[in-house]
Image 1 (cartoon, rainbow, N blue to C red):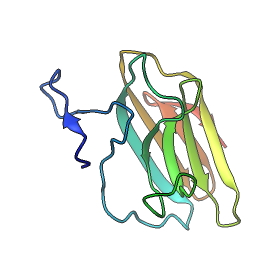
Image 2 (image 1 turned 180 degrees about the horizontal axis):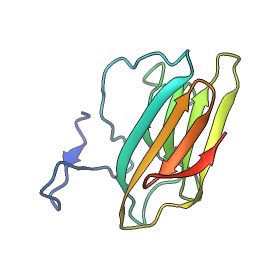
Image 3 (image 1 turned 45 degrees about the vertical axis):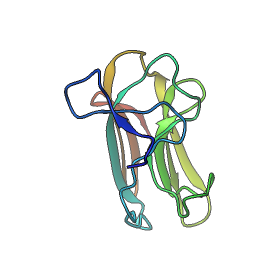
Image 4 (image 1 turned 180 degrees about the vertical axis):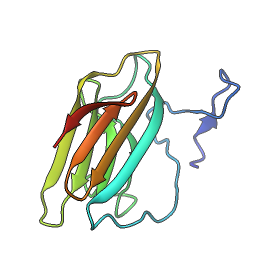
Length: 130
């Protein structure tokens, strides 16, 4: 956990409050997704001040990299959930939810890639499949 990240004092459960400036949780070396198979999920509470292109869960090959992300689940500049999965041929699969996340509401988001198809879920409902 980064030194700037603090447990939310407004919630008695185990959530973290990210202010969008340098906050992250370091989970160690991520597994390879060269097979194209990965599942990512998170419970998200987006407030009205959420940053554009906010990463929620993902990996970087180097800590200082801003573009080298083999997989990432986050928000785009319109508040839609965005899943990016880099392919071995150098291209990316990019899919978005149908609508932006609601403000001030807990929502469950998930992305699943099975090596053939890729799915993006919002509260258990498939939003996009490619």
